[in-house]
Length: 122
Image (cartoon, rainbow, N blue to C red; front, side):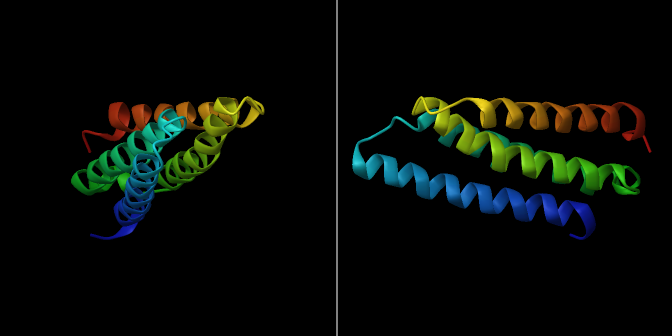
């Protein structure tokens, strides 16, 4: 594996590992308050990033240019912002990060949707 696919998979693996460790910590402590943030880390981080990486590996032409790099940046920064933002919202200490992370995450998905629709047949 090379190129953008590798970076999506590397980020996915890090998110998956962090999500699993967090899940174990919640289980061991019996405190599941952060379960929604944990779920977003696993689904947006591990699952979505791996799906994006798989797509770019299967459609190498779609991985060319600046757009996949923008996609990677939006996706990773979105996760880095939304997960602590959800944790803050759950602790009732603010929702700004959750909102910003949500915006970045949906922009990432818009870039991916465009890429699939217009570059996916390459």
